[in-house]
Image (cartoon, rainbow, N blue to C red; front, side):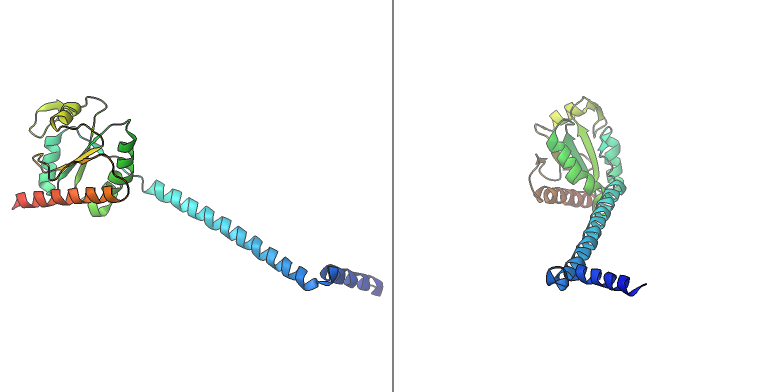
Length: 200
């Protein structure tokens, strides 16, 4: 390279880095911009990774819907063999509170290893007069069974022993916060105590 070109090239670099007489400030700005670009890319990648993991977790932990009650006599026999209570969830398909109770409390509890082997959960759907065999073997419908148990509001949860006797007061409606989950746990524990006391 000739001396004139070298000098011109060197002068250009000096001009770029010493624009307005403050080359250090420009250099710092370039470093900061590079850092911000890398940080932003890393943040975007982290957000996308978390979103993908969350979606995968939700897909992998697809909750099994509650079993529809059709034969309470057979369910009572199963409860007797496992020495666990039955949780009867009186619901309507069209009720948003029922959907919330099902989605946020009952299905996650049914999938949780801590509770899976402690209770048999059954849904009694009241939208249609679904055929149902009662605890004593008589044929009835879900609506008539609900009337027999004075169900006037939904969701209503009753935890019963293997003979259909309530272990505790029914949970009527959907309370806010974590109290509903606690009430469900307490009702199931009361049912377990009742079943174990009868087994002695």
